[in-house]
Length: 179
Image (cartoon, rainbow, N blue to C red; front, side, top):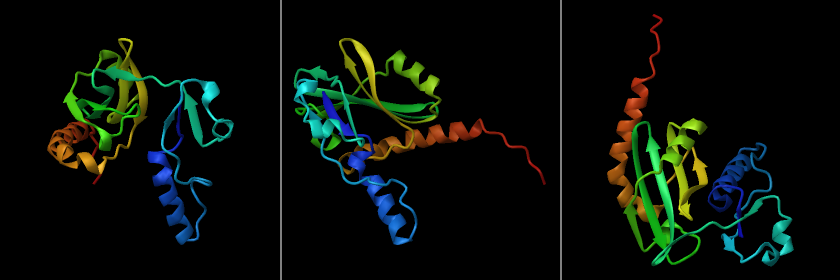
């Protein structure tokens, strides 16, 4: 079982939005949001402490790893229109974080993920997934992906490719001129 935040990046973005709202005397958009604990993996549901099970801001679900020879893998597919990149990040840790990876390698996107993207209506975004027992399993679908600082240099070279995807998407949008 894995216990993780129901928010983005351990709740840090939501906490920042709340702070900004408080500074301007506005209602907090994410009441009760704060920094969440790191993801934790437990052998069985019975091993998860009851206080974690009762928290509405946490998700407890089956842990589905992609096991590789030198650790654990997570595949990250970023796409924009017809442009894309997909890589497997490998870490010695069961919960793969970009900052803790030992290697990354380009991998193909399974047809099942492409169909899911179409079904969900994503033109731009990021899917995190694993191949578990030979089948792709979507872990997270994000329509507004950010980037970890630890992989910035690798992403800079890929940005031009995704920018071409935006241009292609804009080319499909025809707005009649009303002068």
